[in-house]
Image (cartoon, rainbow over all chains, first blue to last red; front, side, top):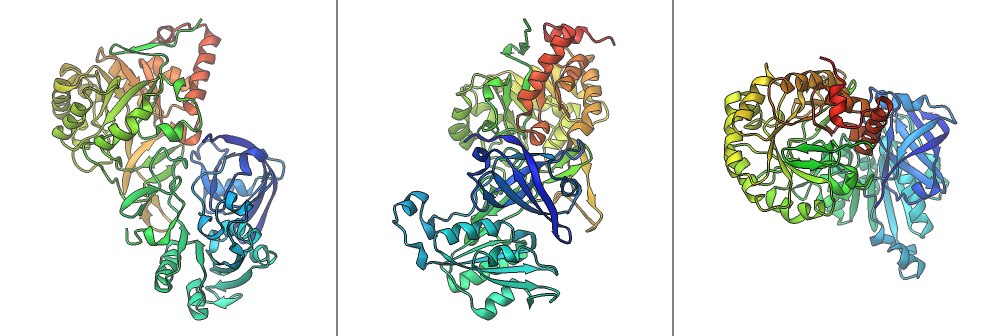
Length: 269
Length: 301
């Protein structure tokens, strides 16, 4: 499969919560429309001394517009937050293995031939902080196939992107550690309290949240896919910097992942 | 007509651009550019058995550089020969296998298994500073460097390149020691031992605490060492350390390198090896250099 680095254009770039930015980027449709939920793009900083690309999850894709939601956490993301509309931005074509949706909605071909009845299926999407954005594109895809979705989104203090889920008709629960809005507590507190269950759980967020969710899903015997995170080097599978132990073997998060089955991850490594 | 060819120990590369070990993986890198554009592909270090590598974080960015403590994760020589070598053989770029080991016996085991393999050169990694045992010891002492070279040279069917570590007081001593025991070429420099502390959490950034520094930040050290080694030994030299542009490649050639490796640049820009080759050609055209030798001759000590 051919990959490339493309010159794209910033359309909008605005702060949607403290330190959290939403950027819409226009690139060649052929280059980005193939993005699947759970994939990411490498964003290459312009400053020469900040060498490495920053891997940012894809929030959603529509035609030739890619939406990224990122936190300003260092030199690279600080630079991105200053890009005005119209600026050029260098990004990779979509990278990584995203959420595998075949089990819940069948392959694209099967769906076209009406071979899978996914309208009876239920999914729970669990997001923590900056892990929430990729679940937007995931929810869109599941909803289009008639899967009923519940989103449980946890934040330290200030929620963001809640409307993106609500406008899709997703039953959305917000939790905050601080109690500033929504349920005061963690996503797992809420999930356990409500005894949430589904045909499939999909999650993205801090490792501690994913581990606790995996424990819950094992207890209720529900399948779970998690998006893992590790500091990356190249972002495309050449340097073996970003590994995660999966079934006792170190796998590349940028290529074999970032999405893995929760039950396969060595949570204690 | 420009002649980019270079002869490394009897193996003629179509151009001086090679991929630095640890920054290249044929399927992954090959998704971005045609691997046939390279003079040679230098593989990730291959060991006698599968090595897990270090725990994460393995990567840390520094100003104008990066730290890595990957720990030579690789699936081992048997898996490599069955699954990865055949894939490499479809390209006409030369194949250089980087060999890693914790003991002399381990190096020899890999070299022996490659005896009948369709590979062109072996790059013996005696210098990786990420390994706690073996590796760092060999490359930092002329005596041990000579011992590995001698043992490997005895059984190797392909010419051997010894990859030197810069974490020494006098790299020319190591270079001379390996030359005296039969090395066919040397490559330098491997990474410089470095460290980064995250002051916001009060911890080292790497799980391994220390790691290898690479990228533009180390280029002046690398150029200096190539310059010194060129004046100490007669062997062909593959120069590396922070090459980001065609001009950087020309700089190493002027310092005395016959060929170069491009490493960290490929993390910054996946097509770097090809871009750098094209920039080198532009440089040569600008000054009327028709061959790499003419670039070297353009340097006045």
